Image 1 (cartoon, rainbow, N blue to C red):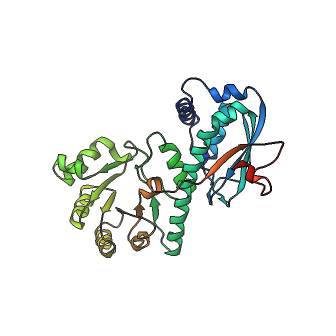
Image 2: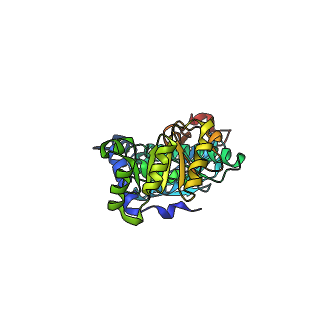
Image 3: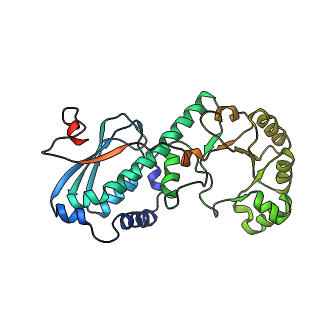
Length: 299
C-alpha cells in the first residue's frame, strides 16, 4: 500500500527545512571545499532491515536540486551489503543532504523493521487485532515515525492530543471520576471523536463503558487475567474496543493476543527499535562500493 499519499507536502517541506537548518545553521565549510563539482553517490544498506522513508529522502534531494534513482520499493526487506539508490547532483549538495538522509532512513527503517517483526508474531498467533504505536515518539520526528508504523504494518493509534480523546489517571483524578471525565469530554468533542479511558480494573472499565467511552485500555494487566477481564467487559458492552498496554514487547506480546482483545499498543515500536545501518559514498571512477571487489576502500 502506498502510504506516501498520506503525507502533506507543506508539512514534509517544513520538516526538511528544519532538519537542514539544524545541520547547517551558518556556513557549509565542507561544501566550500568541494565546490560546484557534479558527481554521483550511492546509498548503501549495511544491515538487514525493511526499507522505509523514501518520500522524505526524495523531498530532501529535490529541495537541494539533486536527483535520486531507487533500486528497491518502500517496505522491501534489504539484505546487506546492497546499493539502495543512486544520487546525482552537485557534490556539495549531496554531502549536505547525507547525514539528514541517512538519519531518516536509519530510523524510519528501524521502526518499520520492528513492526514487521511484531506482525509476524501476530500471524503466528492467528490473531485478528491491531498492533499500535503510541504517542511516545521522538520530538520533531513524529510524522516520520507514524508513517513508518504504517509501512511496517502496524497502526498509528492517535496521532496527537487532538486526534482522539484519551482520559488517563491524571484526568480522572483531577475531574473526580471516570463518569464525570467522560461526560465532560463528550460535551467538548461531540459525536465525531472517540473517547478512550485508561482503566486499572474491570470495574473501572465497566464504568467507562457505561459513561459512553468507545475504547477502554486495560493498563498493566497481567496476561493471565487479561482475557477473562476482556471477556467480561465484552459480554456487557460488545461494541466497545478493548486495548491492552503496558510493557508490551516481542517476548510477551503473544500472551495478550486473545479473542476479546482488539488492540495491543506498544511504545517499543517507536522507542526501542534498532536503527538500520545505511551509508552514502561518492562514486570513484564510476565504481559502486557495494561491489565486493571495491567495497573495502569505502569503509
